[in-house]
Length: 90
Image (tube, rainbow, N blue to C red; front, side, top):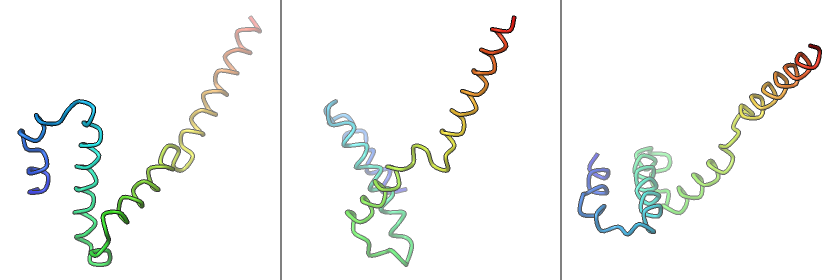
C-alpha cells in the first residue's frame, strides 16, 4: 500500500502536465505490478524491464483471449442473418 500511496500523492498528480498523464499512469501501474511480482520468491530478482516486457506481451494478445470476442461476433452475425431472412419472408 505504501507504494500506491506515495505514487499517487496529491502534489505529484497536480504537477503532471496533461500530455504526460498517460505515461505517468502507465509508470504507476508498472510500479505496482513490479512490486507484486517481486513478492514472489521465484521471480524476486526480475528487472523492471523483464516485467514490463512480459506485461506488454500479455496485453498484446488480451483483446480476444480464448476467442470470446470472436465467438460473440459470430453469434451476433448469425442472429442478424436470421432476423433478415425472417423479415424478407413477411
